[in-house]
Image (cartoon, helix red, strand yellow):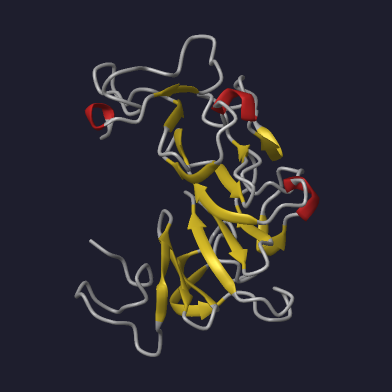
Length: 245
Protein backbone atom coordinates (compact mmCIF):
# COMPACT_ATOMS: atom_id res chain seq x y z
CA UNK A 1 0.00 0.00 0.00
CA UNK A 2 1.26 3.48 -0.87
CA UNK A 3 0.56 6.16 1.70
CA UNK A 4 -0.52 9.57 0.50
CA UNK A 5 2.51 11.70 -0.19
CA UNK A 6 5.03 8.96 -0.92
CA UNK A 7 4.29 9.08 -4.62
CA UNK A 8 2.96 12.61 -4.90
CA UNK A 9 -0.49 11.17 -5.73
CA UNK A 10 -3.73 11.10 -3.73
CA UNK A 11 -4.54 7.45 -4.33
CA UNK A 12 -3.04 4.04 -4.98
CA UNK A 13 -3.62 4.26 -8.73
CA UNK A 14 -0.80 4.43 -11.27
CA UNK A 15 -0.76 7.85 -12.91
CA UNK A 16 1.45 10.69 -13.99
CA UNK A 17 2.12 13.55 -11.61
CA UNK A 18 0.65 16.75 -13.07
CA UNK A 19 3.23 19.31 -14.15
CA UNK A 20 6.24 17.04 -13.58
CA UNK A 21 8.39 15.94 -16.51
CA UNK A 22 11.06 13.66 -15.11
CA UNK A 23 14.39 13.24 -16.83
CA UNK A 24 14.54 9.48 -16.46
CA UNK A 25 16.01 9.95 -13.01
CA UNK A 26 14.18 9.16 -9.80
CA UNK A 27 15.10 7.59 -6.47
CA UNK A 28 13.16 6.17 -3.54
CA UNK A 29 14.20 5.97 0.09
CA UNK A 30 12.13 4.70 3.00
CA UNK A 31 8.86 6.66 2.77
CA UNK A 32 10.18 9.37 0.45
CA UNK A 33 10.70 9.92 -3.27
CA UNK A 34 12.81 12.32 -5.31
CA UNK A 35 12.94 13.04 -9.04
CA UNK A 36 15.12 15.10 -11.33
CA UNK A 37 13.22 16.97 -14.03
CA UNK A 38 14.38 17.45 -17.60
CA UNK A 39 15.26 21.02 -16.60
CA UNK A 40 17.60 19.75 -13.90
CA UNK A 41 15.38 20.66 -10.96
CA UNK A 42 15.11 18.40 -7.92
CA UNK A 43 11.65 17.50 -6.62
CA UNK A 44 10.92 15.69 -3.37
CA UNK A 45 7.86 14.33 -1.57
CA UNK A 46 6.96 11.95 1.23
CA UNK A 47 8.24 11.72 4.79
CA UNK A 48 11.03 14.11 5.72
CA UNK A 49 11.31 13.77 9.47
CA UNK A 50 15.10 13.54 9.35
CA UNK A 51 15.60 16.21 6.71
CA UNK A 52 15.90 13.78 3.82
CA UNK A 53 13.64 15.88 1.56
CA UNK A 54 15.98 18.85 1.73
CA UNK A 55 13.00 21.12 2.43
CA UNK A 56 14.10 22.57 5.76
CA UNK A 57 11.46 22.40 8.47
CA UNK A 58 8.99 20.49 6.27
CA UNK A 59 8.40 17.07 7.82
CA UNK A 60 5.90 15.70 5.33
CA UNK A 61 5.32 16.78 1.74
CA UNK A 62 2.24 15.40 0.01
CA UNK A 63 3.02 16.83 -3.44
CA UNK A 64 6.39 17.12 -5.19
CA UNK A 65 8.16 20.27 -4.08
CA UNK A 66 11.37 21.83 -5.39
CA UNK A 67 14.37 21.20 -3.16
CA UNK A 68 17.15 23.72 -3.52
CA UNK A 69 17.41 25.82 -6.65
CA UNK A 70 19.86 27.83 -8.77
CA UNK A 71 21.06 29.83 -5.80
CA UNK A 72 21.92 26.69 -3.82
CA UNK A 73 23.41 24.71 -6.69
CA UNK A 74 25.51 27.59 -8.07
CA UNK A 75 23.28 27.81 -11.17
CA UNK A 76 24.05 24.18 -12.03
CA UNK A 77 21.40 21.66 -12.98
CA UNK A 78 21.02 18.51 -10.94
CA UNK A 79 22.07 15.44 -12.92
CA UNK A 80 21.93 12.50 -10.49
CA UNK A 81 20.04 11.60 -7.33
CA UNK A 82 20.28 8.65 -4.92
CA UNK A 83 18.24 7.92 -1.81
CA UNK A 84 19.22 5.92 1.25
CA UNK A 85 17.03 4.88 4.14
CA UNK A 86 16.83 8.42 5.51
CA UNK A 87 19.33 10.43 3.49
CA UNK A 88 19.59 11.96 0.04
CA UNK A 89 22.60 12.59 -2.22
CA UNK A 90 22.52 14.54 -5.48
CA UNK A 91 25.15 15.50 -8.06
CA UNK A 92 25.10 18.68 -10.14
CA UNK A 93 26.30 19.09 -13.72
CA UNK A 94 29.67 20.33 -12.53
CA UNK A 95 30.19 17.19 -10.43
CA UNK A 96 29.48 18.88 -7.11
CA UNK A 97 27.85 16.64 -4.48
CA UNK A 98 25.11 17.76 -2.08
CA UNK A 99 23.66 15.73 0.78
CA UNK A 100 20.92 16.00 3.41
CA UNK A 101 19.00 13.91 5.92
CA UNK A 102 20.16 11.59 8.67
CA UNK A 103 23.90 11.74 9.23
CA UNK A 104 24.70 9.89 12.46
CA UNK A 105 26.81 7.22 10.79
CA UNK A 106 28.56 9.67 8.50
CA UNK A 107 26.43 8.83 5.45
CA UNK A 108 26.28 12.51 4.42
CA UNK A 109 30.05 12.64 4.05
CA UNK A 110 30.25 16.06 5.71
CA UNK A 111 32.70 15.04 8.41
CA UNK A 112 30.61 15.65 11.52
CA UNK A 113 27.89 12.99 11.74
CA UNK A 114 25.19 15.63 12.10
CA UNK A 115 21.86 15.66 10.22
CA UNK A 116 21.06 18.27 7.59
CA UNK A 117 17.58 19.50 6.72
CA UNK A 118 18.77 21.30 3.61
CA UNK A 119 21.09 20.06 0.91
CA UNK A 120 24.67 20.87 1.84
CA UNK A 121 27.63 20.76 -0.51
CA UNK A 122 30.37 18.22 0.17
CA UNK A 123 33.80 19.88 -0.12
CA UNK A 124 35.17 19.07 -3.57
CA UNK A 125 38.61 18.46 -2.11
CA UNK A 126 37.34 15.26 -0.52
CA UNK A 127 37.36 13.66 -3.97
CA UNK A 128 40.92 14.73 -4.79
CA UNK A 129 39.49 17.44 -7.03
CA UNK A 130 37.80 14.98 -9.40
CA UNK A 131 34.14 15.27 -10.41
CA UNK A 132 31.66 12.67 -9.17
CA UNK A 133 29.90 10.84 -12.01
CA UNK A 134 27.92 8.19 -10.11
CA UNK A 135 26.43 7.85 -6.64
CA UNK A 136 24.52 5.21 -4.71
CA UNK A 137 23.08 4.99 -1.19
CA UNK A 138 22.51 2.07 1.14
CA UNK A 139 20.84 2.06 4.53
CA UNK A 140 23.46 4.23 6.25
CA UNK A 141 26.28 4.34 3.71
CA UNK A 142 27.05 6.16 0.48
CA UNK A 143 29.30 5.41 -2.49
CA UNK A 144 30.61 7.79 -5.13
CA UNK A 145 32.55 7.11 -8.32
CA UNK A 146 34.68 9.90 -9.78
CA UNK A 147 35.55 10.72 -13.37
CA UNK A 148 38.98 9.13 -12.97
CA UNK A 149 37.42 5.82 -11.88
CA UNK A 150 38.08 5.98 -8.14
CA UNK A 151 35.59 4.83 -5.51
CA UNK A 152 34.84 6.90 -2.40
CA UNK A 153 32.66 5.72 0.48
CA UNK A 154 31.33 7.06 3.76
CA UNK A 155 28.87 6.18 6.52
CA UNK A 156 27.99 2.99 8.32
CA UNK A 157 30.53 0.17 8.03
CA UNK A 158 29.45 -2.52 10.49
CA UNK A 159 29.83 -5.25 7.89
CA UNK A 160 32.69 -3.80 5.90
CA UNK A 161 30.35 -2.36 3.26
CA UNK A 162 32.64 0.64 2.71
CA UNK A 163 35.41 -1.57 1.33
CA UNK A 164 38.13 0.13 3.36
CA UNK A 165 39.42 -2.99 5.13
CA UNK A 166 37.86 -2.51 8.56
CA UNK A 167 34.46 -2.00 10.21
CA UNK A 168 34.82 1.57 11.48
CA UNK A 169 32.30 4.14 10.27
CA UNK A 170 33.60 7.00 8.13
CA UNK A 171 32.22 10.51 8.73
CA UNK A 172 33.77 11.81 5.52
CA UNK A 173 34.25 10.32 2.08
CA UNK A 174 37.23 7.96 2.08
CA UNK A 175 38.84 6.53 -1.03
CA UNK A 176 38.79 2.76 -1.45
CA UNK A 177 42.37 1.66 -2.01
CA UNK A 178 42.73 1.26 -5.77
CA UNK A 179 45.16 -1.60 -5.12
CA UNK A 180 42.33 -3.61 -3.58
CA UNK A 181 40.51 -3.22 -6.88
CA UNK A 182 43.46 -4.28 -8.99
CA UNK A 183 44.06 -0.71 -10.10
CA UNK A 184 40.94 -0.94 -12.26
CA UNK A 185 38.99 2.08 -13.39
CA UNK A 186 35.56 1.81 -11.76
CA UNK A 187 32.58 3.04 -13.74
CA UNK A 188 29.60 1.77 -11.78
CA UNK A 189 28.63 1.30 -8.13
CA UNK A 190 25.55 0.14 -6.25
CA UNK A 191 24.72 -0.07 -2.55
CA UNK A 192 22.51 -2.65 -0.92
CA UNK A 193 21.28 -2.33 2.65
CA UNK A 194 24.63 -3.48 4.10
CA UNK A 195 26.70 -4.49 1.08
CA UNK A 196 28.20 -2.85 -1.99
CA UNK A 197 29.08 -3.73 -5.58
CA UNK A 198 31.40 -1.97 -8.03
CA UNK A 199 32.09 -2.66 -11.71
CA UNK A 200 35.18 -1.76 -13.72
CA UNK A 201 35.33 -0.46 -17.27
CA UNK A 202 36.41 -3.97 -18.32
CA UNK A 203 33.29 -5.45 -16.72
CA UNK A 204 34.92 -7.03 -13.66
CA UNK A 205 32.85 -7.08 -10.48
CA UNK A 206 33.85 -6.60 -6.84
CA UNK A 207 31.50 -7.06 -3.89
CA UNK A 208 31.99 -6.31 -0.21
CA UNK A 209 29.97 -6.02 2.99
CA UNK A 210 27.43 -8.33 4.62
CA UNK A 211 27.39 -11.62 2.71
CA UNK A 212 24.15 -13.03 4.05
CA UNK A 213 20.52 -12.22 4.69
CA UNK A 214 20.02 -15.50 6.45
CA UNK A 215 22.76 -18.09 7.02
CA UNK A 216 21.77 -19.87 3.81
CA UNK A 217 20.96 -16.82 1.65
CA UNK A 218 24.11 -15.14 0.32
CA UNK A 219 23.78 -11.74 -1.35
CA UNK A 220 27.31 -11.02 -2.54
CA UNK A 221 27.68 -13.89 -5.00
CA UNK A 222 26.34 -17.37 -5.53
CA UNK A 223 29.94 -18.59 -5.74
CA UNK A 224 31.88 -16.86 -3.01
CA UNK A 225 31.49 -15.07 0.28
CA UNK A 226 33.64 -11.96 0.40
CA UNK A 227 32.88 -10.73 3.91
CA UNK A 228 35.22 -12.62 6.22
CA UNK A 229 35.58 -12.61 9.96
CA UNK A 230 38.46 -10.17 9.50
CA UNK A 231 36.36 -7.93 7.22
CA UNK A 232 39.01 -7.97 4.54
CA UNK A 233 39.13 -5.40 1.76
CA UNK A 234 37.05 -6.27 -1.32
CA UNK A 235 38.13 -9.24 -3.39
CA UNK A 236 37.55 -9.77 -7.09
CA UNK A 237 36.19 -12.68 -9.06
CA UNK A 238 36.33 -12.98 -12.87
CA UNK A 239 33.41 -11.45 -14.70
CA UNK A 240 32.11 -14.37 -16.73
CA UNK A 241 28.57 -15.45 -17.50
CA UNK A 242 28.86 -18.37 -15.12
CA UNK A 243 29.11 -16.07 -12.13
CA UNK A 244 27.02 -13.09 -13.20
CA UNK A 245 23.72 -12.83 -11.41
